[in-house]
Image (cartoon, rainbow, N blue to C red; front, side):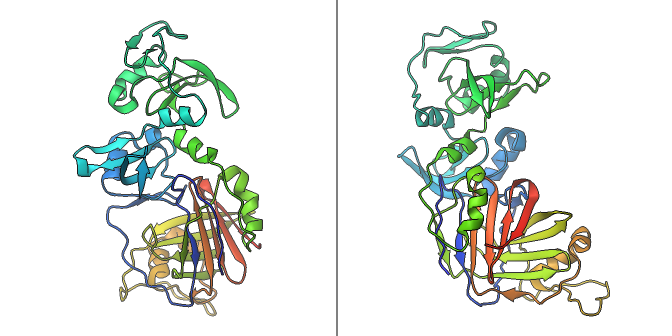
Length: 365
């Protein structure tokens, strides 16, 4: 089976075709932290920077895997996108991890490139600091947040005055900086009324998507396409994967590509499905099992599936026992999108959709 999709900004999409080979599961990368909400992991120097400088509240969830990109046409190196930021690893230049200039990029993308200002604030005349480098001032309500949360190093120079702008259907006072957009949310209590804009997510969503090929997955993808952004065009063929059905759900294994091998679980929850992601740390020959007696007619999972299942009692209760042996599939397609969704297709026509927030579905194309 061949399936073609499109990606934007390194939207970590993978389109995978399976053979009937058994999974060759390898140890996951060390020091990796994974997020069920988007299915992506962070590691190494980018993880250390993310955790040291505010984590989720500052950067948001990862929305791509770490990959090599060319930035602003001049620098090439390891990059990972998050909801609010693009982190760049400049370790080879002795600069460590830097935040991308997303504020400037977003303004250019939306037809508002920087032009010099006159340092006359349009809003908030108190606590102003003027920047002759760009011609704009930072005033209340943004000046205190800017100063106490990294200042020039974290945000860069102001690129616009404070101004009214519609964000997700609501009008807020915002100001753009080289690396960020600050938003004033008066409905929130101080000091939590200054938020960082979801610029990286907005940039990804603003990318135009070319038409998708008519494939067996197209019908399912169209149900989620408008709200979740472009799927990925990168094709990875003949990547091992496996599937196993349980009393109340499924376990899926996807072999190594840009990420380490991953195991996904889907469990039924009333009218909905819930999914989780686990790094596959199983090593071939590693003993797996437990003391629970196996009910007649049911199966205890083994290998990587077994390690995850036996080590997570809550997952055992949610999934129940396996009802069929683990099997490598004849063909599979996996689409990873930075908007927090994945589509896994296993023959014969089982389609698993994993959305942000841990919600999922099992559908027919």
